[in-house]
Length: 384
Image (cartoon, rainbow, N blue to C red; front, side, top):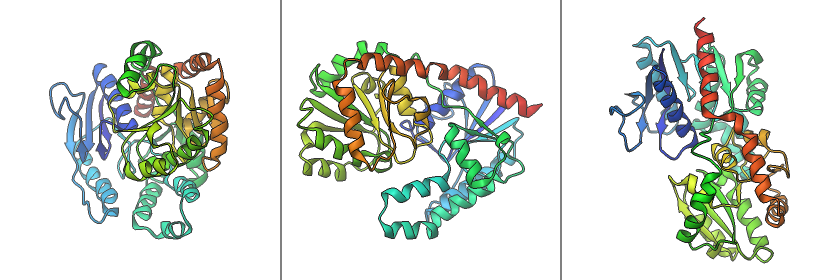
């Protein structure tokens, strides 16, 4: 098949982008002709269009200012470029105007605005409905879900499917739930033996210390504030604990907060990383008390590595977590004392290794190869 993927911007740090690259590699290996339509594609090595890349790169221009025009112009210009060629399948990862399949990996924007109200002061709550950027995204989202060309929506969680049905009245048979896939060989419990001790030595962390990893871009949305509040309350009860913060965002405000809370020396800000595999392996708990996450790839990768995960029920991956058995769920990230209880329970338990094994088992059916087969089945059914 000749397949086109649409993604506005690629960076090597995003979970959705890593998923897309893995999907393209699998499809290319099966002999399909793969194209990618994007405005920015940052991956090195190899460079876009090189002989080792799994896809042919097509540059989509955008109007970058004012900001709301970026999404609108990308949708418009990508449509013009896609209409010039004949593809068997056009699979968009963005809110666009011309696609056969849409993967709602970024969630439902209308639902995100509702969840966002929990973490904003009243002034921003008032401004969000009239913000041109949000209005443009809601416009595109509505057009997308009502498009006669759109044949299938891929939600990456049952919660995501429910949100789309609730907000846009899309028929349930048009939405298929295909959870994110993970490379079970790359993210493997064997990494703990391979990287744990050396990774801790490199960071100056002791073998017996308790390490909490937070990894994700957009620290506020992912719940770093309540995690820091919780960690500060626990500093006397778990004196050998550390928090590692990795991902892309402004570090300074969170460093200042950690200093004010008296835990600045026990929190390491690592910035964007390509060593997620090693960071999971040296950690005892992966914590992401996110306000909204359709399905966190980082949580999935941690579980595949055999690391218990603490996250919220507004994260799609929570569908694979049984509280207290293979990880922990919290109802509301603003109730950070609930985070205290979960951290203490995993810190004090002698069953942490067993919990990690159960985490691995619970995501074992999400092997990337099996997920790719499900996507191919969707493509084949659409062509019949």
